[in-house]
Image (cartoon, rainbow, N blue to C red):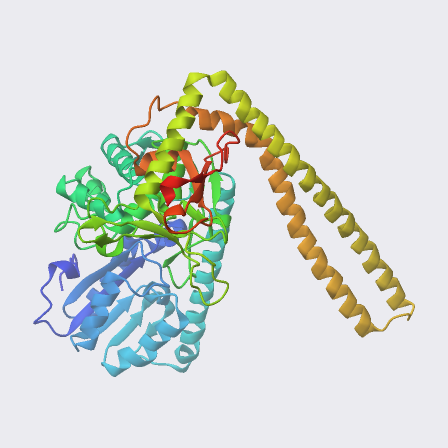
Length: 567
């Protein structure tokens, strides 16, 4: 045989009519790369080609999985090699050592003890001295032990890598492999992100359209109609590899999914923040990603240039939390759910359903309490209100507030400050009193438990009695601790409430007069709308409507009088 043997990669060979194949299998994971050249693909190939030539093995074909973990058997090259084995096209299967085949005790054992013998495949693990054509007693004992050690190594390596990643994450270092759509790695310093000028305009458009009230489907359709490349296809266009393995990157380059858009709209990275530990792998054997709860995220603010401002981001998140489906009238002009998620019942506090309706060609859209007619804890009255009436009421109150804010801004600001101080004083005094009471009781229970412990030691109370009483007191302490934490947070928040006045003024100052109400205007200015129980009957039926503004709540100068428009 030629001493300078070269063999082809399996992707370059038509194996459909081949038999008696020698699989020359090499694998290298990112972790193995830390071990230097001994496990390199080049070194593995050299060693295995020597075996092929020395043993004069027929039809050698090279199968390489580069960058794949040994715990993952869903690798392209190994999958194709095993398919050929099951087709009885393989006579020899050689690897540098067992760990190249994989680091799963069960899977490697299944291949070496069942699959290969069943299909008459000679298996060679060179460095481990394994050759199924030359069986010996020591190998039958050694193979399972070696496979188990390989799996333990994989588990230990995974644990160490996870510890390193978490350490970096807590230190504020980015641990994501790829920046989110809209950012690129800085060629001068890959740890820095720079804005992708093309993608950034797309992200701004997506946020603005969401803020304007468009659904994810409507945004996706618009991007497709305008032939805007989806994120993975955009990466290809600028010379980068796609992140996902989707097969439609080429065939459907403009097809944006709702999931992609939802992920973009929820990313705080667009505010200029680094978000670490958003996801995790299930285990060292299962590399699928699962989401961590938001409480476990680590967010480091202002680490790179922002694309979206905080106000826009907050409004969009608020709107995303509301269902905006119009059911059978979805997307039909005149049946838009203008106040989605903002209308509440003044009696039971539940949200109002939006009920789009037509009668004899006329629009009868209305809002109705979601608790009405519930069999358990139902609301006593539907608190029904026509959408057209609500639009007129809200428009009138907003115009009044805008006019007052612009006509005499100083007086308006003083009113807001007085209202804030009055509410702050009232809530603060009550919460401070409750906090002191809870803290006193918490310390008091510490003393009670200590006394119970001493009485138990002295034999004054039985062990059973001590356990029962101490458990009850410890449960009370848990509840007190939760209350203390909640009150402390609320009191801290009240200290920041004075800043909310300036935030509200910044928003209301955008409007010198109120144009036609839009979803964007409503969500920018209004926190909630409360519909109270109607009074009177039929033509004398009137409803009180209260508006609570973002940041400042209900204005004291805005009378909560029943409104005849809501009849």
